[in-house]
Structure formats: C-alpha cells, structure tokens
Image (cartoon, rainbow, N blue to C red; front, side, top):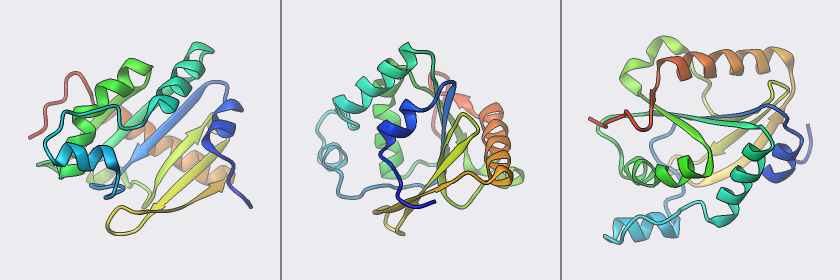
Length: 168
C-alpha cells in the first residue's frame, strides 16, 4: 500500500477502536528507558509523554485502545519491564491484557505484531530477532482484516486484564 503514515495520522482517522496485538518476548534492546530499568533505576514512562497524550486525546473522543500481549513465562527481561511500566499506559486510557504463550496454541496468531484500526486497516510491525524495529507494512485486504480482527478477539477473550495478571 505504499508509504506507511505515522501512527498519529492512522489514529486520527480511527473512529471506534485501535487494537494492538504484541507477540514477541523482546523489543528495542537499546531503548533508554529499558536500559535504565535494567541498570536498577525505577521504571519510568517509557513511551514518553507524546504517546500518553495521544492516547488520552483519542480516548477522550471515543476511540477505544486495546492492547493484548502474548508472553512467555517466566517473563523475558523486556516483557518484565513492560509489565512494570504498563500502569502508565492504563492511566492514559489503554486497556491491556496478558496471555501466557502456553495457553495460546490453538489461536493461530499471525507471525507479526499488528495494530488494527476500526477493522478497516491493519499495520503490521516487523522486528529483527533481537527486537530491533525493522519496518511497518499496511494492509486493507478484507480477508486479512477479518482474520486479524478474529484472532485479536479470541486472544482478548482468553487474556487476563492487567490488574489481575500475575506473571509466573
């Protein structure tokens, strides 16, 4: 579909829901907030003020942000960092659920993380083996959209809300 617009443009065109499925055990190994956390410093707001402001802005106009994380247990270091920093996302208005990988085999999850915007557009995220971000691709193929929407809902229904999830 050509050039992938920034997330801010994709969410601005969204009217109902933005659903994010995360499936990896590690992201962005050089993320300064993660490196500080690994060094024993208190968890900070890793996404930065701009992300939390964006979530607040769009949830205020009625867009529902849902994020489901499929994770290995025990949690990998980066996912532990995400778990400890998730209250910042929740405070901004995101709903977040966790699904241990060992409970997900029958769900047939796509091989890439994605954001699904109003069941009309999906943005896939691709990462290197070490978690380094590579690129985003957009897709508006109705069959792919339907598949992503269905798998996200199956994961969401099986996953545990953040305030109830206790990592193994």
